[in-house]
Image (cartoon, rainbow, N blue to C red):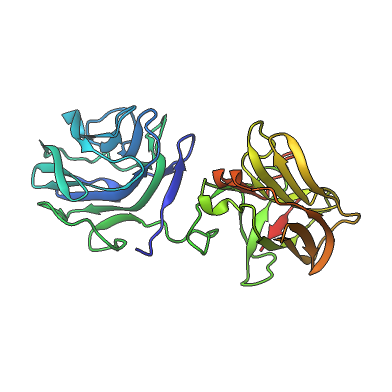
Length: 357
């Protein structure tokens, strides 16, 4: 409730700490817990891994077996212990708890699998990797939220009701990742945005609020995951934003469907600013709509851009003035498969330092 999550794409995303003694759980009680929403069963998917090398002697972790949702936990040299199963495409609360010398895994508040008897001093568990095996390319795919490590306290010693609010840094908390402080978020809380390369918040320019999104003009962009809300359909719609160009460009993409110009994918669109092709609609690899204004956009100033479809006519506005319109009733349904913000589909780059607000 009112929380957040971190997204891991399964092909290179992970979080890793530097070595810290506070992460070593020692030989006493501990609790490691978090919420996991798994979206893919390919390969081994590590929920967390606390080790600095390939040895398991004084370390521990938890992962899902390849091709399944079966949870395995290892504590010191105990080997992999079957600890129940998670549910795909659903939030699962997982807690690994040591109380005395008994290590229990709880899934959604219920003790699962066989408890482990271990008094192992986990002194080498000083290096956390979240979403990947320590140094091996085996990545987690999905979302992680409310990850907490508590050294010295067994928070759960019997079945319990999973938390209904984000955790806090209680006494003995060594690490807390609630993923609630992202700089670039959807304020409607309907879409997950992924920053690619160095796309970031910048305070160098802003129209409102003191900051804007900054793209370096070479490889930066955002992606939106598949979502039915992104399908604009065949009726009326409006897309608008403020742009600040640091260099001129013929075509700078503000938004584009993920299946842009893909054979067999219909109802995709691209919204751009610049001299050419400020509004494109595609059915497969066929252009069905194209608005190309006769003049470009100024650099070094904030400019308002709006794309509006009303009663079958699409109009592109610059600072509230129409710069072109066309008839269009295409059902923009395939955009539900996701999209990109600020990526140029023609050459993979943007005008240097493009900023959006």
